[in-house]
Length: 371
Image (cartoon, helix red, strand yellow):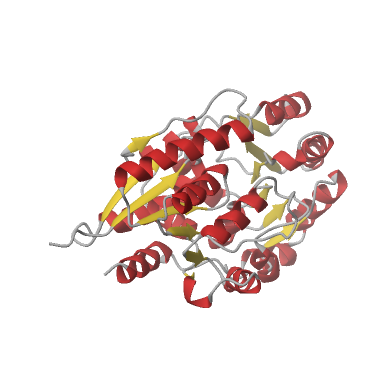
């Protein structure tokens, strides 16, 4: 009797877990058609565990790779060695990973070394600047070179892959699984049990900022912009879950501690963050995933980066690149706060990132290919 197809799903960070959880759920709903094994690298330990708990995912393998002050070469070497051993043990028919982290790059390379087909979820994102974002742009290029299945979230991502010579038969436009995860999460009953004054008259601005390429003066510019935004606009309240990286924590707490109506809090569990995002007026972020999630909730996003691998959000009008210049961040945020027409134009734009059924499409494609 021929065994069912066996899929190995590998992820290591909180964003990866959020975007892979719908695929895990879709496979779990079809136990008679496929086996699946979940391996986490725990590239980011604490933030990963929050998401696993919310989606009730119990990893079959936990490599627990995170180390204090880990360097990219050290992490890459440990990830490649660990994932290779997992592939040897599991003997999967397909290996899946999502996005552009060190985990996905090492997974793609390990699968290649073992001659196992690799499926890249969220394939085709590009800034065309190898150092921005760093090291993600190179990671996703390498994953595309090694992939057999390219699950592209949008037509723009499909076109980027075609331009690089990827065979069209290997590219599948599926939408982005983050919309699956977000829609499922905000539909769940959930009480925001945060020690924050969320029910006052102030409009909420949700902040995330943690990108490696902004560390230093550019990150200080961001912090000064947030301070000015709070000081100049008494009708707003800023909520900033601060990333655990010391390069983020030091300038944030030095510049923003004690500023009225600025709340610096620990990173939130995913359900809290998703529901807080849903209650916010505006999101100011350097995150990649938030450029996809916020438009699905009708929330304008100001992107504090020089480039974005998600130009669809810019083209659709749901997000705007504002860079890391202090004055520009303040000006663009105040324009949305003060001009109802400008706000409505962004808030009501149609999200280009999917309909909440991306994971189902991915699983259908893989199971059809392995019959």
